[in-house]
Length: 319
Image 1 (cartoon, one colour):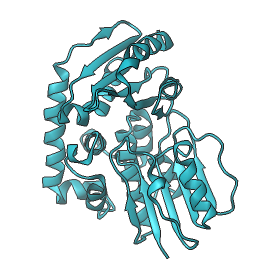
Image 2 (cartoon, one colour):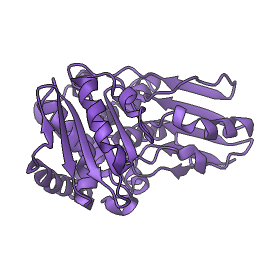
Image 3 (cartoon, rainbow, N blue to C red):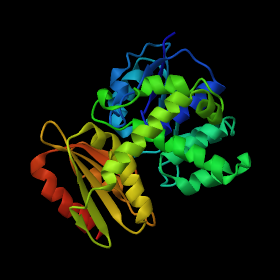
């Protein structure tokens, strides 16, 4: 039997799988990548006896790979919160999908496991910038403010680590970071026992965010703001968490963080206003390589000649 664990390289994907494998240990082949590497089922060579777990990547973007796996006779557990489109009806597919804006994969897995590894669910939910959802989820843990802040920080740092255009941009490859954190049933044990790894993430995050905080917007008004980041590793690493920080600081404003790429195109992170978490996926899907969820979405490779069109569409959409 060949088992596969297929998961997004961000905090939500890593923390969802950490919960699941602490509850249901399995020696599976890990398939992941940088956060924007989402067509992961294309890398699965499914066999009739394969068991495939897919976490935190859009079913719509992985439809061809899912169809191949099901046709091969594999059993698939699919848990996600991104746009899915039509969900195949197949007895070998167990799909747990909820696209509500205040839901993430770690939340869904926590419910599926009846709260067995709640700490990691809280970390993943904070990492996906669902602060209110994470705070509500954490209540049964009875944590003081300082301890809750530690879980929020860890979620942000793990999420930050997933961004970049290639694995060499990251401090830890997502597969390696998953192996480090999943060894612990409790995230506080990871923070305490793996202090060097935690501090590597924390130091990198703070340095990169300091560089980003010096940027001025290319455009800003009461409804929208657009920031341009250079083609540098620090900028690629920070694009997602910086977008989240902007959204948290200006909850009535939509944000687009545009990062230059080697090929002359752009990587774009979009955040809907926190007070109206809708439309980011719809907006980004208007452009090639765009997708995501209602509150947060992106475009992996926007051609340079479409940047002006994107900015105009973004400003009109949320203006």
